[in-house]
Length: 50
Image (cartoon, rainbow, N blue to C red):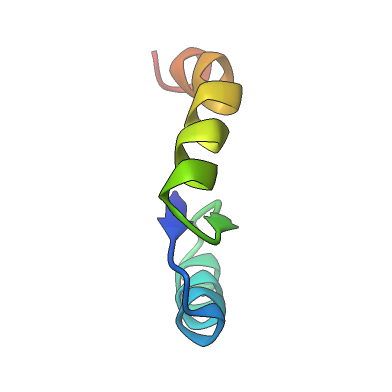
């Protein structure tokens, strides 16, 4: 799961909440970093879900 939020407190809260529920979480500061993360991880993500 990818979280993009410029509010560090909210980002950390959501990360803890989702990890506690068993999700793999990657958190970034903004939309540009989110796009970079998706581009970098897309081959890994697609191979893990197909």
